[in-house]
Length: 399
Image 1 (cartoon, helix red, strand yellow):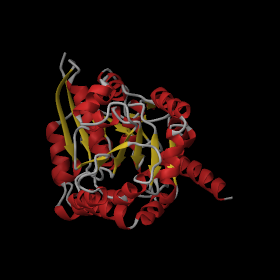
Image 2 (cartoon, one colour; image 1 turned 180 degrees about the horizontal axis):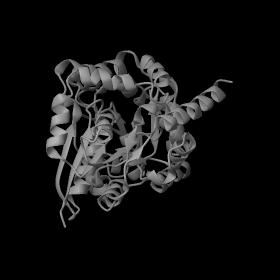
Image 3 (cartoon, helix red, strand yellow; image 1 turned 120 degrees about the horizontal axis):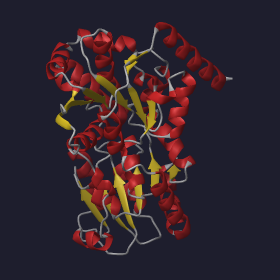
Image 4 (tube, rainbow, N blue to C red; image 1 turned 180 degrees about the vertical axis):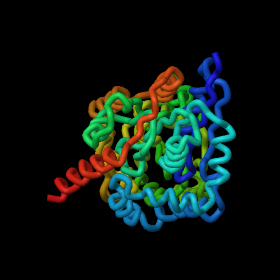
């Protein structure tokens, strides 16, 4: 039997899409029915102008204009409204990307971002590529930009998202609730006491994990000042990401001889840090949320990016695995309240484990390697029906 060639496409707009792609790459390479596996960032094949627009602009807006991102999230959350983006991308040199995809000639394509999904969908629709296309949504909620006119399967994080897609008109049998694919290391057992000692931590003291995000943007130094005001005696790990300036500001806020804080830049040891921590403090990105759930790590949400992270927050709060600080002034109060109530914190931890889907990547691979469903085309009539269903939902919310 011929082994499957697998192409996984992500984009480096943020880091979650790439991390999901990396998790899937590991899972596919572990399957004996799979031959060559390639994971690539679609932006590497575009010109520098578009690459900078797509990735650097996003990071800048997260830091300087998050409300604009929230506005754009809502404005663009209409089926097919952003199809023009694909035309713009074509004009900005997708030729190398298309050439790469067709030359590799995959049996299976998996996209963890909507941009390459749209391109591959178009190639399949025009009979320029004979491949299976699956789209893996990397947030808990679903945004209209993830819709494609030709695909085989969607993989989503939660049952509610599948229900939403069903109500829009997508067939139930093409939607799998897999969870968000994460590195299997997050699910591997650990000696918490021994690992804490390896990181020069007290073996039993409450441990907080403060994340500025992999991009290293956000109010981390302000949060450090708030954490100094806690009544409970804690130890805090601060991860600042790739932003050197953020790390320097945090280090100054911590002080250089404060044994209650450890400051990290970018690290690939987040599985360790999450598993030895008692509370995560930061933004609820899709991958971060899935990783925290798998580690049984309750979350203290601060400054979620308007749009997808606010939607993620809603689900995490509703499911009882997180609290949210709407004001920085309340951070010490919220955390002390949790630490003062071990029973509640333990319930949150157990709830997180119950909601986690550590085998998401394996489930996706198992489904796709043996899959033989034909491509599903969303016809013009289908697209119009989906648009009407979405508009009806939107109008109902506005009343």
